[in-house]
Structures are given as structure tokens and as C-alpha cells.
Image 1 (cartoon, rainbow, N blue to C red):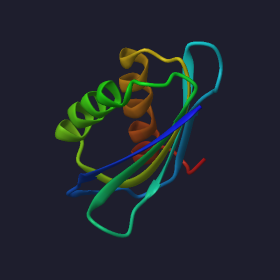
Image 2 (image 1 turned 120 degrees about the vertical axis):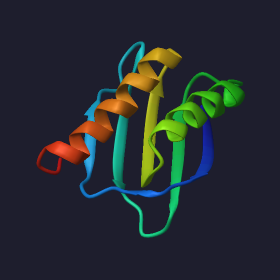
Image 3 (image 1 turned 90 degrees about the vertical axis):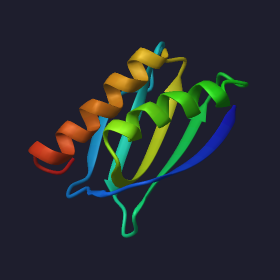
Image 4 (image 1 turned 60 degrees about the horizontal axis):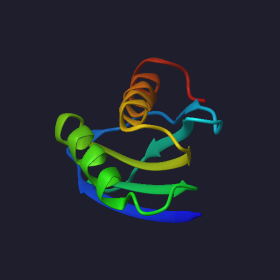
Length: 101
């Protein structure tokens, strides 16, 4: 089990909490909540060790397009980078358009 932490500059406000996905084979859970500063803070718990550079690249790409100020927790069970990107986009969509989770 590995825990990773990343931080990115952010410009956009996050208004609502969101919870998407499940921790299951090949998938992951994303919990997103508003941050009180202009940062995005991401904590990842994963059973797949040694992929910190890959996580950083996927997250850098996401926050380059969506610089949202949020605290994000990701609980991973072997998701591919594509699934990570989809779940992050889904969490952002839920936080912007739906009732809080």
C-alpha cells in the first residue's frame, strides 16, 4: 500500500462536495471537497506501488485544464490513467451541477 500527496496551484472555486466511483478491481473512488486556499491538494491511497510519476502526469494534465481549488482523496484499486481522468472529471461535474454527496 502506498500513499502519495500532490499539490497544484488553483484558480477556480469548488462549491460542493462530491463522491464518485467505488474501490473495486480496476476502479477507484474520488472524494472532492472545496479548499479554502488557492491550491488543489490530492492524497492517493493505492495498492499499486511505484507509479508516483504516472499519477503526477495524470493530475498535472487534469489541473492544467481544471485548476479547481479542492481537497481530493483518491482510493485506488488498480485503475488505469484513463479511468483516473474520467473519475476526476466526473467528480468535478457532480460538484458543479448536483446536490452535495
